[in-house]
Length: 209
Image (cartoon, rainbow, N blue to C red; front, top):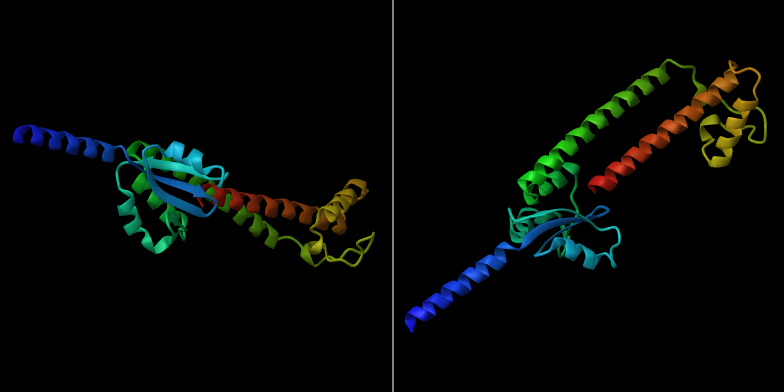
């Protein structure tokens, strides 16, 4: 009888340990909000939360560390329950490396290296742009002296209607080398660059926040 009881206890312990080993620690992201939790099926857990948070994404999951370990390690970034806000991409990436499997980590690191390389290229391009701007005439001081926007400083022409007006000025001009047209052309190019940089920043935040 004692032997049978011991066998039963051993089987129960093995079953309990096996169930625990099936639990994954996961990382989900919704904008700048990060969720660290545990589930036997993180993908199903994500699906069940999509109704309340349609933008929620499952970033990674694994069994390397427990949710309790992650909660203790990153408790200073906790904003309530299983939700966290990390102050930088560096901290966020540390969280990913803690949770993800070794195979996933390798994949993430390759992705991050590619992103860092692209960021350096964009920074170099931006620096070249600013260096080129220094050698140009001070077009930013130009004030429109014609048309329905007469009296407005060129660098204050930013909305879509004003941009259309400036583009039409270039299109209809007979002297593309005039100071006026060069100034307008410079400002339209600068607006494109500003829009592009802002778009890159938004994409970067969306991907890592």
